[in-house]
Image (cartoon, rainbow, N blue to C red):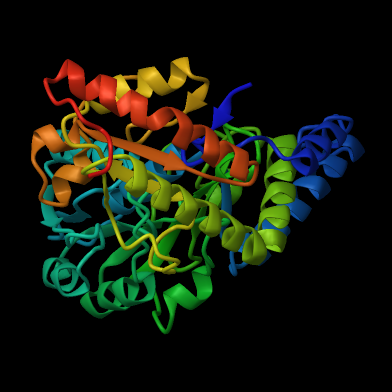
Length: 399
């Protein structure tokens, strides 16, 4: 039986979401149709939209359902860029963002001549608010992670949003990794901002909270100026054309509802398991270094993310050896189509390319147990020993 510790990549489908998805599929109708069947589907869809909006502290009209987090990020960044003010030609891009953001901004740079203003991370993986503010002036759009999906650093979103508002810049927040793990509030993060500046877009994905893959949402302020990616039908305020996924949206709402209901005690449980894993790694593997904010119960770090540097041991080799032992982990983001490359997040922490190839991300979640942690600690020291031996470094025992 596989020990699954890659919840940051995706987490198992919740029974509530599966049941809601199946029930919704019993209602046959296009929610854009005006006949009774279509309107029955429309009621399910709008009930789901209202529930998601309530849980994200937004208005229902602001919730635009998408095919996932990547589409939501692309709609936000490209849509805000295309609707930018005259003369605004820069995108504010913190280092260490998810590849959905990095690749979208790279496309804007290559094909739309966007100027990229990088914002450095501190040694813990957090975005420096003062550096962000310095880069924001006159920009077309700014973006930031609510929480880093690799090292788990939680950013001060309200402060970043306030700086974007003060600079008159529309701001997008990628809350995909944060959803269900820390409080996510579009309204409170937007603060006193008015008009099309400040926080105007927030992206989330269902599969991160136990909903189905292929479903996400972009919260778009009613005051935002944003152009759509897709055309043909005018659905969802004209921002996302196409027949809407009723069952997927209903399942997303059910999963998010369950995740938020248990978030307080569940994240504390996962934090305790993560701390136990960290203590065990430090006790059994010489030189292992936990990256990101301190893994000591701090709320500045996502509870389930344990990102570890194993000097002298290639992360790809460790992943293979643990997989052979029935333990699923990651070398970082799982959204790179299986391509082995140095972690760009570790590079953003100021580490070398060699160090960026020697990391593993253990991410715990709702189904994780003490037995899972024990299994990792039982197999990890030998895996590190073997990986280091392949690199000419022998001992993985604590000194």
